[in-house]
Length: 306
Image 1 (spheres, rainbow, N blue to C red):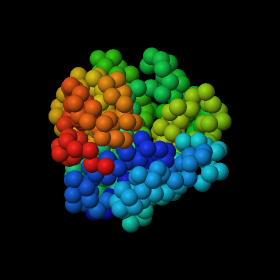
Image 2: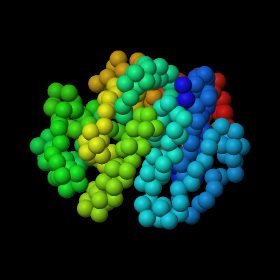
Image 3: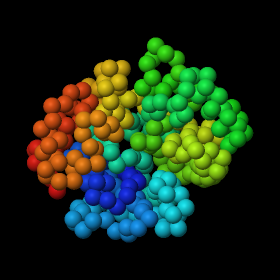
């Protein structure tokens, strides 16, 4: 089984530290994870190389690809996400598109088996609507975007993952982009439609760009009628108190941690230096933050690995 992980990033100390820790976690799991191809997809308006201190770590175990300057100048950080689709290796069995602030904690055994038996694009339904509002407002917003961009209304058969389950708030198959997986063939099929829709979205909804990539992926899957699979929370678990309350069983079985919340620590700094690393390990945490902290302590023997 050949796995490939693609992470978009800026060539900064912070992003390099996160990606280096992602590699460290893969290597700790061993086997197919140690052998997995990890690609950092960098793009920036000025910098054209990563900081010198990270060069040795990347040369050994992390491949680097750069977004063309012209593409970055035109599409900014969305160009990094776009470039990942072009880098999917045909020889890979599964390609994982991850954010830099994610960390693999357990093997992906069940997910790999499911997608090997029945190929699909898989992801976790996003936490909240891309445009705030109650259910009727967000459904109207979705259908307005869908009609203008793909010429059809959507089916609302899913539920945002961090909305109280007692309050119905339906959505289409709208994945959180922090962790999306599929075969190279399916992701490449998705790409052409995704990028075309994204460019149209950028022109027609210029004030709603923050989730443009996620929305465009959702609309592209709907347009192409691609097979997709909804993941449970454990495969893209946020360090969020709401998730801890809503998904206690998932919390006990986290496979991939998405440490995107910064209420208790700065996710960008914790792996950049020994001082920040030690300060993170010394925090008195609970819930998903504690799960993440404990795992990092375990795989590093509580010592800064870089």
